[in-house]
Amino acid sequence: MKTLDTIVAALLVIGGLNWGLVGLFEFDLVATLFGGTTAPLARTVYVVVGLCAIYQALQWRAIQSRWGLATAGA
Image (tube, rainbow, N blue to C red; front, side, top):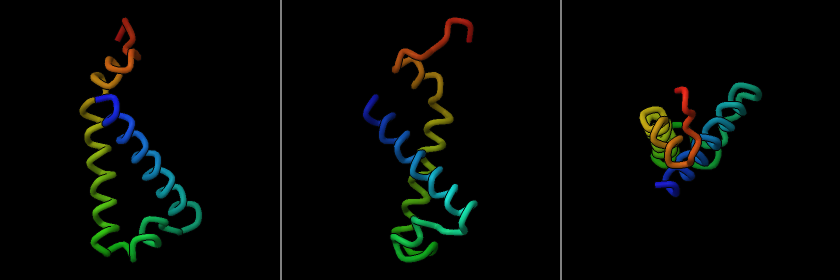
């Protein structure tokens, strides 16, 4: 499961950087690399990053426990 956690975290960083580029420079790197925002591959990337965000949100406590980051008071 730690491998999945790492992959999810990496994809979320990539998604966050892409949104930063969109916000700062109106440049969508995913769309540029994969043929536009409506291209099937670009849409797949957007969906996968979105699913990673859902996984991260729902598994927050479990991820902390797996990585030994859970706090005693929480």
